Length: 464
Image 1 (cartoon, rainbow, N blue to C red):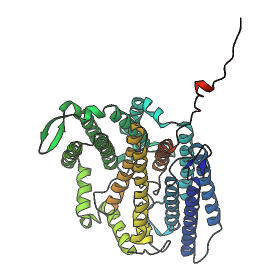
Image 2 (image 1 turned 90 degrees about the vertical axis):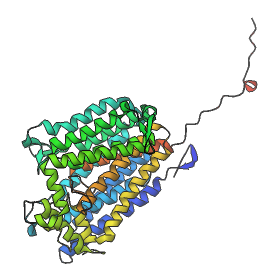
Image 3 (image 1 turned 120 degrees about the vertical axis):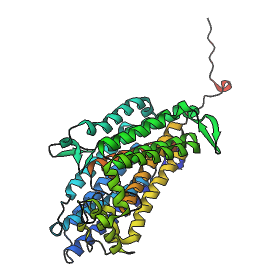
Image 4 (image 1 turned 45 degrees about the horizontal axis):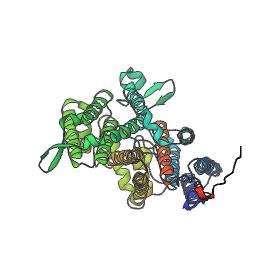
């Protein structure tokens, strides 16, 4: 499919449609396999209803993209559909094993509802924000909103904000939301706008030390503020994951904006200093590190610390290379197998190859984000796309690294895959912003009709 006004620039919407249909087939087949294995060969008619509903919802998103952002990247939407659909299948699979588990399980119908809300948010962002450059005008307003959302759980009473020791929620009645997920988007827009405006200043060097061009002392302010803010989140909200994500994405964007290695070195130094200080001041940080280093010594201690980590490792070991098969493992033995440890669930039933396939999808998503940044036509769009891609990649690294014992476990969710409404809706917004920038960068420039030369202009003689 090409634009009527410019046949040289393909929109590639038909490619997106074909990939979406392929994702629907895979997701529906996975749901049928789960049903067949858990229910002794019987596949419920609900699987067909689920596949049809899943296809209809994502087709609506595709149609909106086709008409509102026709030149947007054709790969991101199918990747999100496939990961999200497999996440729903895994949540459903864990739910079927409820009678065999001693920990509370999530309701897959609730996650389907959050998917609908997320797709609605995705469509709203695309239809309201027709030009991503408009966001830079509200950078400081979005920064204030982001900080308020980030701080709000910390100032609320614990009964309204604390879940499993982390104060990152707002809970009213039966409804709960994690505002930090939306703060991430607002702060990314602010970071991109601020760094574009201050890029020249931040690139200046005052002296060289050990081969590095160090910035001027007064230019260290933004990094110090980000460092202190991340520590404040850690101290008050007991949230290692958000602190690491918040600080890491700012340092990465700072490096991308200035192309100066010294900012990376300074950022890593501040991170090391903050981690060292937090370890010696806060007991929960010491617990996380101890469990990471010696999980077997704490196996029979307070749930869900090392028990959760070891059970996840046992499950992944059981899966081996090819997995036990969808519906044939025991992921219900892992606490929060459908949310924090859904990666362990996937690795047990789909094996190492299945886990690598999912990681390749995430890598492709991040790569397309960087490609959008490289092809952007304006500095703000370039940096915003890069920041969104970094945020996605860093979040996947932190949660997968924690589940596989590469790094200490944190409280982040796996994008599009894990059970949880706030993260899912926010990531749909992240994808919408990437598609909007992509559409702007690939859209052909508007052609203006040239004025006729003066010689061919019509003249008229007027007599008095």
